Length: 111
Image 1 (cartoon, one colour):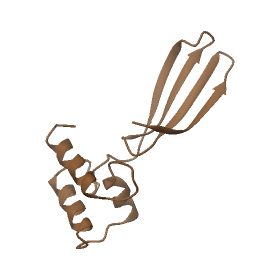
Image 2 (spheres, helix red, strand yellow; image 1 turned 90 degrees about the vertical axis):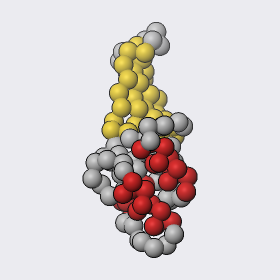
Image 3 (cartoon, rainbow, N blue to C red; image 1 turned 135 degrees about the vertical axis):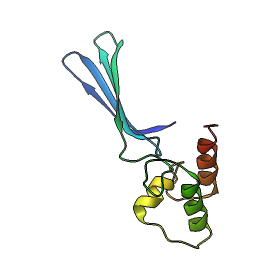
């Protein structure tokens, strides 16, 4: 997992670092708070509004989602921008065979 757009802020009690992941991992940002001695005090995750791989938006990643992804790749079906965002499991901006593989591995419990 890689992070981009990290912000470091000095607070009254220490430091706060907030970063956004590069790609979709089921959360939108990570915030870590340090005390004045740079010991981690807390960490929080802001959750994303979808499950990566859940192309049809039913709340689960299933073979139905994989089928939608494969049909999109083959040019048989169009997907909305939101569906493409949901199916782009590796965060490269589109649905490719790599995303299908990640979804299949997720369904099989391998990832």
